[in-house]
Length: 309
Image 1 (tube, rainbow, N blue to C red):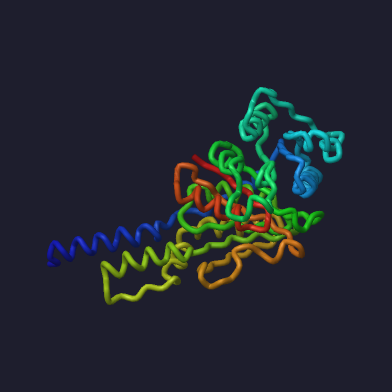
Image 2: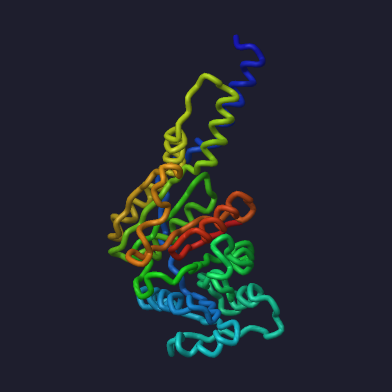
């Protein structure tokens, strides 16, 4: 019979493995293909407005959704007519609302939007702000908006529809994963490509290895151990996306990767290959919030953030 110390070590090891191997069991997840009915586009008069509104019009043309436009700032208001089609709605908000993010959230509610699109950083020059910050508006919208948001950070590949290639990125167990997959499957073009990237972050692996080595000093652990765990965790989601791709006609691929392998997290260069990155945000989870901010800062492609509480 193992001594109490050994039983304690075994329990610690089991708990640590469970952190990464909390695999779902049961029937395949049914992907519902969530499509927007009313999209709010918030413009700020920046160079990103053209790419933003063009992407919005591409979605409107394909999905027949209602479009609302909120122009914030003098330059945005003056140029709003250049971007808004005759069948779109100009959304006004109370002029006494001071903060941009409060104006945007008020417009979302008054218009009844179920998808929000805005440039990032908002009303800040990207070159002067630098790559280390996504701006306060992005952070507040991500924290408070109850609907998915598409952030356009760099206006590359203008004119080409990013929804032709959508990549869902998951790095750990994520309560928003299924909802994110529903939105990604709903937005991808019928002849487009949808990918599920399960990525083991280098920091996660190092923490895992440190814990395991403290419990089993002679054991060897590799990134593949966590890759296998992620694959088991999202086996049902993968199966559901496979089934949805067969029904709807889009191409689908599962990619499993270790971050330190130095392969790009995002697809090819946006100037030649536009894409949309889809991320699930668990708003009460500090690590999930930080991950979203980091991806938005680093991604050269537009980022779809799908929140759950």
